[in-house]
Amino acid sequence: MFVPYRRLVPVSFPIPRLYILRHSFATTTPPLTRNFLDEMTARHDAKSKQSARWRGKGVSTRKFSKQPTKHTHAHDEPSNPSVEQMTTGSSTPSTTPVSTDEQQKFSDLREGGLVHPTLLLTIAKDLKFEHMTPVQAATIRPILTDRSDILAQAKTGTGKTVAFLLPALQNLVNRNIKPGSAVSLLVITPTRELALQIATEARALLQRLPQYKVCVAIGGTNKSAEEGKILKGCDILIGTPGRLYDHLGGDSSPIAEKLQQLDTLVLDEADRLLDMGFLSSLKQIVKCLPDRTAKPRQGMLFSATVPEYVQKVSGLVLSKQYKYISTIKEGEVNTHERVPQQLIIVPEFSDVAAALLGALRQEQREVGAETFKAIIFAPTAALVNFYTQVLQQFPDMPPIISLHSRMTQNRRTNVTEQYRQARSGIMIATDVIARGMDFPAVTNVFQVGIPSDKESYVHRLGRTARAGAEGRGSFIISAHETWFSKWELKDIAFNEHPADLTAQNDIKRITEQMDSQGKTYQAWLGYYKSYVKRMGWDNVRLVAEANKFALEGLGAAEVPSLEKSTVGKMGLRGVEGLTVVKNRSRHELGR
Ligand SMILES: Nc1ncnc2c1ncn2[C@@H]1O[C@H](COP(=O)(O)OP(=O)(O)OP(=O)(O)O)[C@@H](O)[C@H]1O
Image: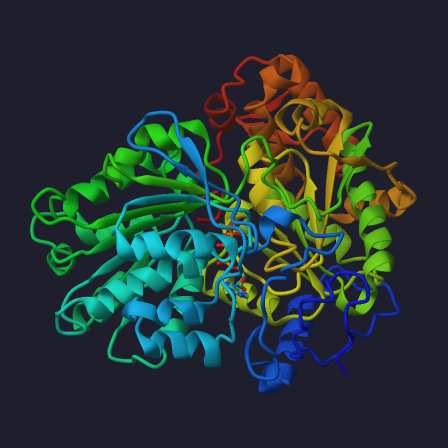
């Protein structure tokens, strides 16, 4: 039977009724190979009948609370789309208030035929949304009425996807071209999972207009099958930069041909797509699109975080007269105020695993085991595997699955779906799901070790407390990493909490049986190498800390060895304390 949240969901938000299974705890210490994935799958299969979706059947109409409860933040609520910051080009944005007196309804968009009645029917009857969120209220009209280019910022989980999809789909419906004949809307996202999620959302919005087709272009899947689908008929294409460029590059790409009628270009998680990691592939993609001066199109950038550089490079997608709309007040932190953020500092890196287990136990008690659904973010795939293997040995932990980019795309997609459907459980992941992913009812986010930047902290935390729900955050770092909480996150009001390290001896016993120490050690060195200066270290200190972590935290009997070429690639040649061995041949590696 469904067990409602006692503490974590505000009264104004109806509880989804899709979860029915109770989680029964294992009572004996499981072997190292215990497969929690099967356990989760069984739970998923058993409940898929009545699952529908979070907002599906059985869920009454949801709206954002007009009167914020004491746990909610006024500026997250639709009654307060607080600021519209408008800017042209790179000038300093001026701020003008947006109407705050009334919560806008989707049905208001019927006036003057602004949005097609069938789309509005879908929103009301199928998605069961009545009121617009602040970002939707602030962006949908200007996108439709002035056809302005938009840079929009709003906190995580406040409905940015519908804010760009709805007007873009309306533009598509308005166009007088044969459905399926050309791509009208191109959405670019930084991750494959997010592309798939947005495609699902677009299909949900178009369920009563099935003549329009949504396709994805993501890596890790069969490229020619994907191409076939797009060429067969595609109105909306959602993809990741690498695969999109694979399709578009070259002399006579048939997919580039399909994009010659492009009407709308959206970058979701725009700051990530416009940072150094993606910028050059994005430029290449834009070169393959029709020339904007000859064939005008609408450009939109959406994100919860908009660092300064975004405005500088926004010209790649936006016209000079773009509107900058933010529902976050100037000077306000861009995490939700209603989310308590706990900071746990341990003396050494080798204490982090025990502190994580202690915090998980504490939070599980706080939230209630029945509904405890957590995501743990770790810096690298090897650390994800390490924490997964350790935590899976504790019978009082709920089912645990892991996700990172070293897994096959099939597995990634399955894991994502299982977690989406799970009522309780833990997912341990890298930043691959840090942005945009909308898993229902995540009660807790744990971050172990520093994230790559402050934006990453904000997006990771944003996997909880979505769509008006509440949630909790825990940030667990070693004393060496406190510069990050002190400086990068100086605006966040953390509750500092002492670490519970009681599981330290149990963890030591577990790690001593593991055989992955070498891989985890290497990944740890690679990750923290980029922070040497910020830590106030030099390379010798880095290696000394890595060695200490290997011996005391990873259960290694001796300092793991590194191949000569790896040491060179890391820029650690000649650094004292390393155990360097000659490169192994492909034959020795068993390839
Ligand atoms: N008007 C609405 N009323 C109720 N729920 C809504 C509304 N609009 C969107 N939602 C739901 O809110 C959740 C969060 O939306 P969405 O994923 O678009 O957030 P986001 O702002 O893009 O988050 P992020 O910054 O993490 O990408 C989704 O489950 C979505 O279906």
